[in-house]
Amino acid sequence: MKAKISQSSLTALKPGQNIADSEIKGFIARRLPSGLVSFGFRYRNGDGRQCWSNLGTFPDITVEQARKLAKSRAGQIADGADPVEAKNDTDGSGNAGERIAAIAENFMRLYVRKNNSEKTVYEVEAIFRRFILPALGRIPIARVKRSAVVRMLDAIEGDVMADRTLAAVRKMFNWHAARADDFNSPIVKGMARTKPAQRARKRILSDDELRDLWRALDLPPEGPRTSPRFAAYVRTIMLTAQRPGEVAALQSGELGRYLGTPVWKIPPKKYKTKIEHWVPLTPAALAMIDDEAERDYVFSDFRGGIRPISGITKSMDRLRARINDMRKAEGRKPMPHWTRHDLRRTGRSLMSRGGRIERDHAERVLGHKIAGVGGNYDCHDYFEEKRDALERLAALVAAITNPPAGNVVPLKTAA
Image (tube, rainbow, N blue to C red; front, side):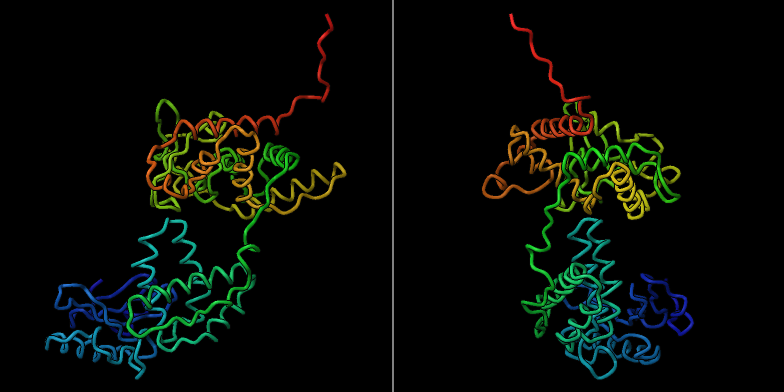
């Protein structure tokens, strides 16, 4: 939007929007995801590369102060100088250095969104919006202290989330350090709240637990926020061994056929490894997929499937409670806590259980990269091997969830 930057025009700005000043070319005001308004000057340097000179954040500086700084930047460029290279006052308060909120915005735009799947981008943006920007956003990057990072982590409930936030802010600081001449990250070893071995989950569902899950999913949807497609969604995670977020985002346009077999083609932009991943669909998995032509997201409960499935957290809580109610009625102990991702781990473990699926083939089903020279030079798609692995998985899941009635094995009559 092009207009004169003023107090009233700033009030109307929404997060992600910006105003290009109609009087001073290159003078920009933009509202960050944190809600702060950042002033800057956009120009091209002597190499023709577009650059951004940060002017400060409202209300630390007023609109008129930012306008004067923008005129100063325009004068420097006219004289052949480069404001980014020159170490001038960039926040309008006598403190050299951009604020972390501006660094975070560039980090998201130039690194996170270009190098990660949509799911990862969504999760990283949520961490910045909830934890990092409220705590650190207004601090100039050159003045950020380790103690400020520690206070931010101390205020986060849950050690795992604190470590995820630490990982995100560490990545941003390292990214900025690689681009700046005199910045050293305040993050040091030992700031994590948990150890990698503690964060690694090993939970898989036993045969009894898997049977209880299948029985509970056969019951009608429970609660106003439970999606009618929720049961099919959960079963598809188990039968394909794919990540829950990727299954939730499955779209009808990603379904096709290859070598006569139905296949789900996950595009690079939606996949964690940024490489297209093909998942052969067995008859059992295909039965879970609603392929209505007018539906966009397969497991959506919205009209026309215009958005992915929603209310998953509450639906999972109801499902766990339903399983435990069944067990209580049968005089059994409650089922230990489990997550959707545990189903993916269970599927991978079941593929090893039969002893007929090679380890590398099972890893390829999950979309994991194969280590070593083979992973770099072997470009075969192994589609048939992945299909065989998933068919064996489906057969084993069927045998577990639908066992034959009784345990009596008939003996042959002696001759």
